[in-house]
Image (tube, rainbow, N blue to C red):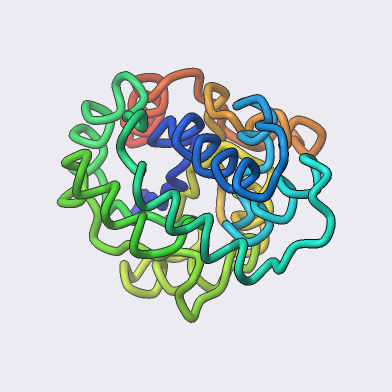
Length: 220
């Protein structure tokens, strides 16, 4: 029996590549650099905004930057464009409709809490989730399992009753650190980072509909 499904956000429920890339490129241009391709920046996503900024500036050959100031500026630029291009992956809302009858749903993301909540509200999916844990909360960032362990405690879910759904190696490592099963979505922009760490024990979904069907079938 599944008592908790914890979802990553970027690359799992939402396609946010363009807005993240536009914010990072705006920062790069402000500091005299040349914009990077969207897919290059998308490959840097997953371990928190600070690391995304550091990677983007380094890739743009902006070596001597005040990283604290750059992070603050990036977050300001990103807040201006959170929902310009960001969309749910096709079938995500229907998947959430199906799964919330199965178990409590939660969000565990390395995106800061405020933009996370604004995106969930703006896309109309906030009511699906009992808890939302961002990367700037006291639980730290994935792959630290503290946030997932908190969600498990709140749902009174044991490790065998918990599923972590994500798109990247960070999500896979988080699930393993907490001793829970992981489902990776192949359509997410972080999936390539997990390819070398798969053992064959993971669930792999090619679409939100396939994820929902697999979990609903697991009850039988």
